[in-house]
Length: 273
Image (cartoon, rainbow, N blue to C red; front, side):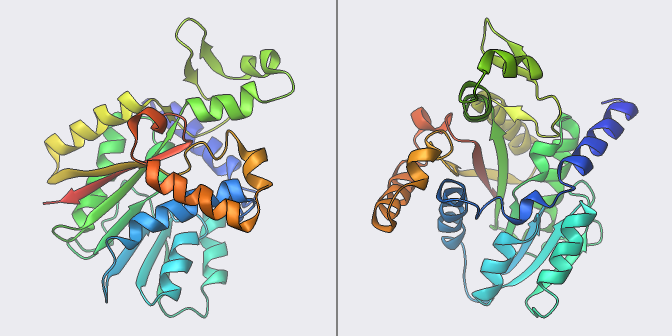
């Protein structure tokens, strides 16, 4: 990536999240909250008494807050200064959470082999260059303890394409706002956003590279929100009981490869050797 491209991407990222959108992203609706609940289900599988967690790209600390309230020690990191300031305010009286501004590509301020669980829920899909993505994953692996899970999140292309383009009032007009190859239905450029949209094959390709060059093996890969955002209108109308059944359905099907491509977000869990 050229220096100017890197600067433009960073500027887009800073502008995109300048309104503090992360503060409510996972709690603004039932459909949005599905991602949070499914991910917590997977995180809980690896928790043990006294576990130390590092949340890299923590946003405003949704996972850090939940885990700290359960008694776990969390170091919450984010690159965006607005997110960092919000977390400092949210956690000002919280002894279990320490807040830092840090770049996922350089965690030299944090000791290696220090954390029982490593969350990388946002940084990788804000990095577009393969080398930088591997560097960020490598830093996450470095600070993890042996046999610790590293949760690495990606954004897939089809659910956002359906949600924001084909479910808009004028898809033919909206599709002109992105880079799109009609013959293959591929998003070639996510204009106006710092988020890189991947296909499932591209995610697997990157993970295979990571497993070759880093001391990790593959754990589960799961979809965080499934079809929740595509059928968000129906999800948001559900009763408490019906919504509970929907979350149970997501948990039961979250690792099904035939459904995974319709999720906005997926997570590959890597296990440090």
